[in-house]
Length: 338
Image 1 (cartoon, one colour):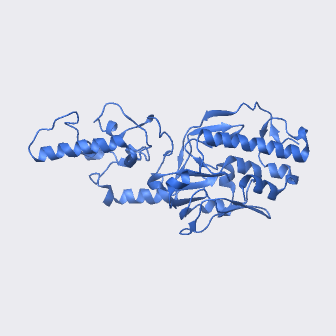
Image 2 (tube, rainbow, N blue to C red):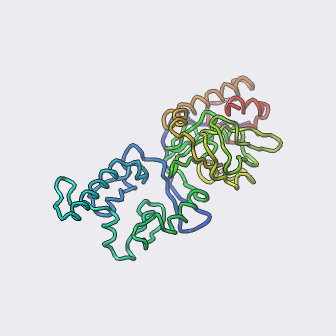
Image 3 (cartoon, rainbow, N blue to C red):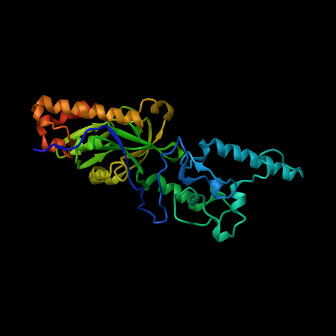
C-alpha cells in the first residue's frame, strides 16, 4: 500500500501559483489577494498616489490597507496643509508643497475615466467613479463590501511548501491546523489546512456555529464530518461569527479541493486580534511547525506499522482511509489537539 509519494525530503521550498479570483454574487467583483506583501513593496500593487500621478514610483506595502500606511498618513497631512494654505491665500513651503489629495487629482479626469477606488486597489475590473470619491454614501461601495464579506473568495498567490504540504504566505496557522487570514476591516477568515485534510479527509461536511455566535480561541467550535466519524477543529481566534460558508456544510468538497480559498469555513470579527495573533504562527515558524508535524506522523506510522511503512516520501491524500488502523480518535487527538 502506497501511503507516501516518493520525493526528496529537503525541507521548506517556495512555489508560485497564479492568483485568480471568484465571486458568486456578481461578476463585477473580482477580488485579489489582500493578505501578503506587508514587509516589502509589491510591484504588482502600485500605490494609489502613484496611480494618480502624484508620486513618481511607489509600491504598496500594506495590500491597500491604507489606514495602516504611514506614507498615506504623511501624504494626507501634506495635502491638508496645502489646502489650508490655498484657502488662506498663502503659498505652501517645504518638500510637500504642491501635493494634493489623490482624489482631487483624479477629479481632473473626464467623468468616464475617473477610476473607482476599488479598481485602484486591484479589487475589480475598471469602473468609473460617479460619486466624487465620496465612498461613505456610495451604493456601489456598500454593495462591494457586502459582497466581499459574505461571498468573495480569494485565491492565494504565494505558496510555501513543506514536504508536499502547502501553506499560503500571509496566512496564520493554529497548532490545531486551522488557518486564519486577516482581511479588510480586521475581519478574520478561518479554514482548515492542507495537512489536516490529507490526514482525516476527504470530509462529507464541515459545520461552524451560526452567524452572530461568539467563539473562543482554542475552543472546538468547528465539526468535521466523515461518514459516521466526527472530529473537532479548534478556533484560531476569539470573536463573533460574521459569515459561514454554507457550501462546506452541505459538502466538504470545496474544502477538500481548495482549502485556502473556496473551502473557507467562517469569518470572525475578532475580540482582541493583537492578543490572538501572538499565539499563532506565520511564515517560517508555520513551516517549521508543519515539518515537525510530518516527522511526528512518520513516527506514529512506524510505531503502528513498523519502519517499512514509511519510505521517506510525501504523504498521500486520505491517510485515514488508507490506514484506518491508525485510529480516527488517535489522529484527531494527536494533531488537531481535540
